[in-house]
Length: 310
Length: 310
Image 1 (cartoon, rainbow over the protein chains, first blue to last red):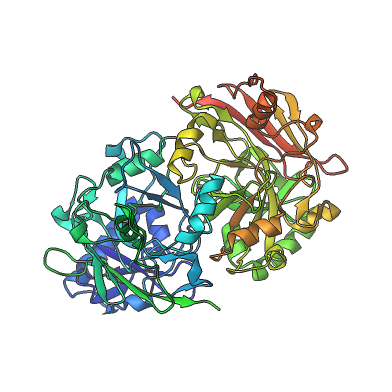
Image 2 (image 1 turned 90 degrees about the horizontal axis):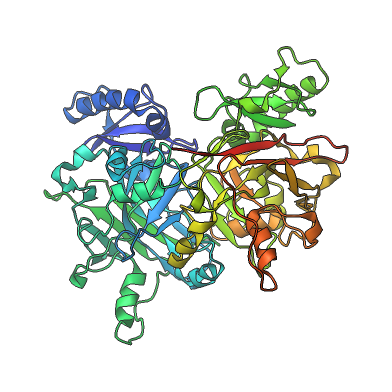
C-alpha cells in the first residue's frame, strides 16, 4: 500500500491511503490519525489500512478524492529519528549521520535559505522507515522491520561543512530541513525491484529542467538497508518511525549522472581540474522521482524551488 | 511548575504535574495526555497545568498521590529533536551534536550494554526543552522559547569514538540511549538560579557512592542556552519539544571534580601522565542530582546501574 500525510494545519498531518496509480486517495482517520500512530501499532493498524488500500485500488472506496501531492506534508512530517548512511561510499563500515527530524519539508515545499553563498546542494536518496528494532539486531532481523520505503532530498550547505568537520561533532548547520516524496510505500508494492534489502530502480534528478542523474539505487550500494539498520542498532534500539537514508545514490558508471552537485564537482576535480559546476541559486528547481519498470511514478515527485527566505 | 511522565505502558507515558517538593504528583490527563502534546500547544495548555500545579503545591489537589521517580520515564520519553552543545569547551562557536531521540531512558533505568570494553562513560549535563524557534532566531528570541529545564546523563562509549571521528559523520554508535531526570521544570521554578540563560547551581555526580563532581553549571559556560539554541537555528527551525543540552558541566577549578570520566582522564594525561581512572564497569552506579540553595532536589535524581545486556 501507499501512504501519505495530508496537510491539515496540524503538526503531523492526516494519514491518507493513496491508490497505486497515485490518482486517488482516501482519509484513513477512522483507522489511525497519523502515520506515526500507525507505525506505533503497526501489527494492528496495517491490516486495516491494507483493506482500505484494496478498496481504493479497485475503485470501491466510498469517499475517495483526487490525490494532490502539493497538499502533502512529508509522510512523517516530524519523526523521532532520522539517520543517513553513506551507503554508496567506500568505507569498511557504514558512515552514518544523525539528522534533524523535527521539521521535515513536504514534497513541494520551497527550500528557504538566507544565503546562496552557503553552497546549496540537493541530494537524491532512498530511505526506509522502520518499526521497533532492538539493540543488537542482525541485518535479517532489521530487514523484517522495514515498514515503508520512500525518497528524500537531503539538502546540504556545502560551504558550511568544512568548519563543522573540524569540530568533530558532525554536521548540523550545514544540514537544513530534509524534504520527502509525497508517498511512502510498503516493500510489497515494489515487487522484485525490492530485493536483497535494496531498491533496484533508477532515481532521476532533474535540475532546472535538465536530467542530471538517473543512477540505479540497487547498483553499487555498498551497504544495504538491512546492514544500515543493524549498524544503527549496534549499541541502542531504534524505535518505530525511525527513518534510515541511503545517502546520495551514486553509480560507478559516471554516464548515469549524479544525485548531488558535490559528486559532480568531485568528478570535475579528479585529475587535477577545477570544479566548474556551481551550487544551486535562488530560483533553481530540483525534481526527484523514481519510475517503475512500466514508467509509472512509485512515490510521486519531490519538486522544490530554492528561494531567499529574506 | 514541575512536570514528569509516568510509565503507563504507552510510548510517551502519562503527563504528571509534580509538587515543588517532589513529594506528591497529580495526573494531568484531563489537560494534556503527554508532555509533547503540552509543548505542541503550550500557550493554551501551560496555564491549565499551572493551575493544577498551584492546587498541588497548596495541598488542595483532589487526587494527588505519592510521587515515585522510579515510576517515571524521561520527561519526554521520545523527542523530535535532541542536540548537545559542548558549552563548557573552548571553541569560537558552539560545537553541537545531533543525538538520537527516539528511545530515551528514564531516571532509574539500567544502562544495558554488551561490552565493558566499549569504554562506558557517564556525562552529567543540563538541558532545556524549547517551544517553536524559527530559523534565524536571535539568542533573545531563542531564550523566550525555553519552556523547561532538566538534567541528563549523556552516556558515551569512549572507545568507539575514534573510529567514528575518522569518518566525519559524527558520533552514532558511541552514543547509546541518553537518560533524563524524573522531572522537568519551568524556568520560573528556578528563581534567580536561572539567569543570563544559564543555571547557576552545582551539579553533583556520585559514582559508586563517591561524589566525583559538583561543578556549578553557571560557571565557565562559554555559550549560554540562548546562544546554543540560536546556533541550532542558523539554517533551520527548531520545533516544539527540541531538547538542547549543555554538554558535560565542567569548571576550570579542578577541585570541583568532573562530570564525565573522559574529563578526569584528560586531566590525568595533561603534563604527560597516563590516564589512571578507568571507565565504568558492569555493576557500577551513577547518581546525578542538582540541589537548590536550600539543599532541596530540583529535578529529582538520575540513579542508574550499568549492566550487561547479555
